[in-house]
Picture 1 (tube, helix red, strand yellow):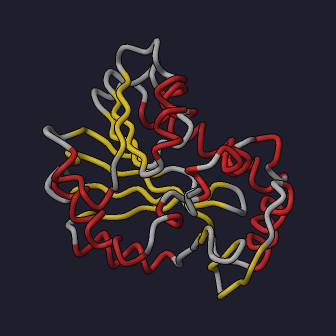
Picture 2: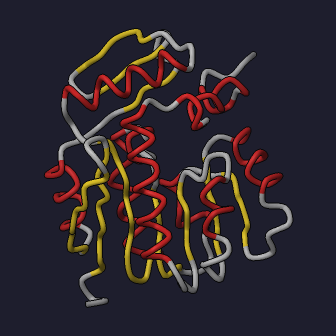
Picture 3: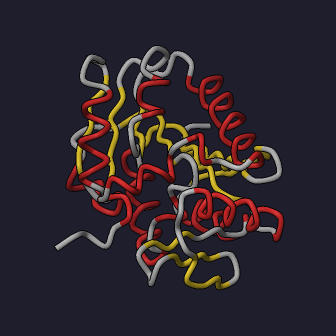
Length: 223
């Protein structure tokens, strides 16, 4: 039986193909890449949650000493492993971000959840994800997500249309595609503030064009 997880199917790669991005999302991605390259330059270790097809693993390998990528979609894990097979400082594992205590054996200086990874996770697992980040990340977490606005929603819908996906329904900033096959959320900034504070992170935000926002959490004991 074919998986109902859109990222467990080859067609799911369309959603992470730059050629399908509308202009607002292209700008978001370019600013996100520049931000991460700047802030992770010289990092000793990085945990990338939601590594997808391995694009950021490949991009950051020259500037980070050691990278571990995790993704819940086994199909994408295999794509990432193939993409990074010649990068000795990169490892990729299959797993769910809510289970970091079962997946990890060491801490990491930084962690990233890039391009709306947090919005592709069921919200009920967010408390476990942030609890795990607080335990396994030494200094900072970088979370990139969509901003909440009508203009951003239109860009998101253009992306799905460009990829040939039908939208089943829209509920606020939640998009449900193809009979529930894939659900993507966006959340207001105060949603993350609560998660950060309860897990002992301070928080700063940086706009990534009109579509995106980078949320940087710094462990309070690190400061």
